[in-house]
Every structure is written in structure tokens, then in C-alpha cells.
Length: 281
Image (cartoon, rainbow, N blue to C red; front, side, top):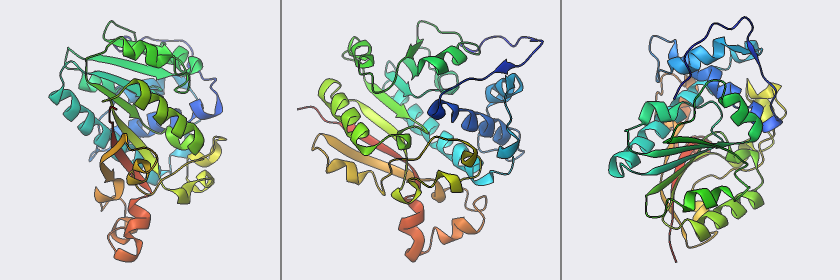
């Protein structure tokens, strides 16, 4: 639930860790996109929160590619999460690295259980703008503090979807293998929607306008979700969606190059959403 808008005398200051600070970029860029006449997404909640934060976003105003990235990944994740909820009305959804994301409000069907998980400093900030409820719970933990799985396991028998947006590329491959293994061991049958970059962007976040002002590093990327299947037969690749397959005119010249065979795999694998299922057994 979103907190009622107040009339604060001063804006809310922000003190977050390096990776956690990156949550401010998609928040701001969703707000900017929302104000466009031809917006891909509408997020009035992001617009409101931005007005209440004390943070210098000026360097993000020219980050048009990152804004398009954020808008398209938001659209795809909303579509695929809604599809899962429509098929499983009493599902449990765990939003890993939730930040100040507003997806629960957009997709709530009145029956699901939605858990927003993030680091304690981020959850503390989240509580200033959102109210926890019986069906929208907050967990102040790292995704690598696997005690969160104990909480999810209590919902045994309910279909489970995990979401990770703007998150996994900040961790080493070894950490992600540990994450996948723990989920497969303890939450068989769960599905996972993961925002992924390609190896070409690892250690090159400095070339991305908006991100180049931050200290968090890109550490892991894959060309395709099919690569994960080689880690363990329990990891089932379902589908993936490249951002360059949408809104070609908004990508300008990059969108046309992404359709050319010599460059297609390289560009289309750079930004994508990947869908997995964790098989039992």
C-alpha cells in the first residue's frame, strides 16, 4: 500500500550502500518516462516519490538509452508477472532487490501474497513511502541471506515466482550459482524472471550514462539464459525477451542495427529478461 502523500517541509535524504543506491536510477527514469506523451509505462507513484527525495538526478536527464531500458524491462516484467498471476491467482511473488518498485500496486489481484525483499537500509527507505500489509510484506535481508527461504517455505503448496530487476549483474557468477543452488534445493517448482546483461557490459558500467556516476560494478552477464541450463539439469530455461525487439524507433539507429545478422546476437543478448523454472528432483 502506498502511503498518503504528505506535505513535508524538507525532502527525504538518501543514504544507501553502493548497490542499493542504484535503485534510484530506475525510480527516476520510470518517473521521466511516465511524463512522456508517448510513454511506454505510467508510474505516477514514481513521479510522486521523486518529488519527495533529496538527490541530484541531473546527470540522468540525458540517459535516454537507460530510460528506454528501464521502461521496456518494466513493461516486460509487468506482462510476464501478470501472466503468472492470472494463471496462479493465489501465487506468492518475491520481488528480490525491490528498492522503491511499485509493481505490487499495479498487479495486485486481491488474492496473491507479495514479498518485497531488500537490504535493511533500502527497506527502511521503502517504509517512508509504502505501508506493509498482510498481503504485501517487506523482508529486510540480502538475497544471499538464505533465511528468507524459510519464510517462503511456509507458503508450501502455493505457486511461487521470483523477480530480480536491475540486480543480478552486480554479483559474481559464483554468488549466482550459490543462489540458484539454494533455490533449487529448497523451492523446487519455483519460477524466476531475471533481468540480465551480456558479458560485454561486465566491468563497463562507466559507459552507461546515469550509471557512470555510481560506484557499483557490473560483475556478471550471460548471452542467453540457455547458458544457465548447463549449470544444473534442474534449471529449466523457458523463454527470454530482448529489449531491442521493442520500440525500434525509440532505440534510434541502435534498433535497426540490432536486426542485422552480424550484430543481432551481440546486441539482442545485451539487455533481456530471462524466464527459468527450478525443476524438482
